[in-house]
Image (cartoon, rainbow, N blue to C red; front, side):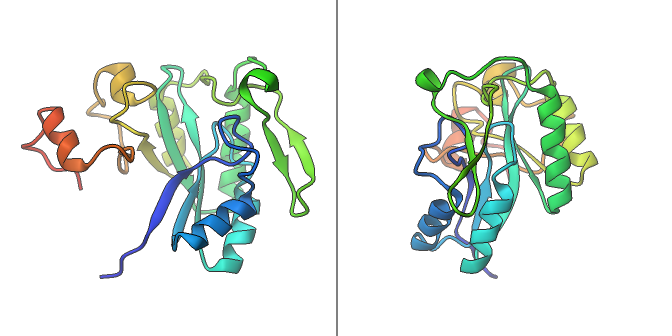
Length: 202
């Protein structure tokens, strides 16, 4: 069985929480240095840096899962990934329509810039990307699967901005393709801590 090293939750400098040094080419360079085979580009509520990350990653033999970390109106974070470039663009358009009119203050939160292959700034997002969209958790899940994507509740062990922290549980009828645990948790610890030891998460 083949095994792969991966990091599927990476923000670029387009996310205000991302360092300005986190350009797509630098991310790929670090991924190569860490011997990663797969990386997921998941900026907050946008997919705009996925194409540039793919451009650099292809040169290094690294596979990019393109998508976004979506914040639902419940303020729960979910990862969405798509295979096709056109679908990634469609999902970005969808997110843009549902971002609320909360404006970014670069002095407080950081810059939100998109760059090109020559490191020129080609776009600065005026809306605060990490803010909640007006989309419910169920609406995001349905849209992701409508576009043949993968829907993954993010960092479900965290006490903030996770589906369990915001709702108290993961709805049984929510169609998830996996769940993400943060680096601070293991599957066994999470199951035991939440009295789920009789269940298995594959």
